[in-house]
Image (tube, rainbow, N blue to C red):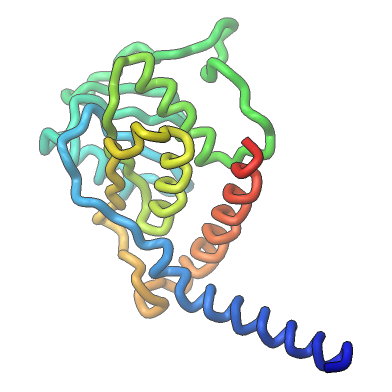
Amino acid sequence: MNVKSRAIAITFALALLAGTAVYYAPRFLAYADKPVKSDAIILFLGKDSSARRKEAHRLLNEGYASFLIIPAAHQVFNSSNIPLQPVGTAKHGSRRAREYPRYYEATHVEVLDAQQMMNSMGLTSAIMVSTPYHMKRIKMICDKTFGEQARYISYVPSSYESGMTDWGNVASADVKMVMLECVKIGWFRLYSSFI
């Protein structure tokens, strides 16, 4: 096989692989557990977090956990929705007790903050709440961050947002989010292999 034929074959194989990955991306990103009684509900914020918040409060009100932790805002609420003193705050008014490398993506930092907050409160189990397309990446990050403790974590996507099992269920506005989520998973896999 000459160089030109080999280049065409490699290009075709890469295009086929990319097309297959794009086709299965929504199904790959769809990850959900049934909620189980846990110490805390961890809420991941985003641009429009109203559906996520609604899910977290539903789980809290149904008695699945005693605390709601919002790591991005460094807030903790009890089951009566009463804010508690922020935990793990650093000196000089900083909300984060330690700084992370700049290449850590935001969800990874939220998981690290959630772990720190849980540890400071003596909590060992949690329900992670976010949008459906975000759950697979949160699980991957939690598996790496929490290690053995990850078996006490469940992942519950917002039931107030559409699920994604194939492209027929993905709204056109969400296509960009699906693709971006795949890129972020790739980035996390890349840099996490060195930490």
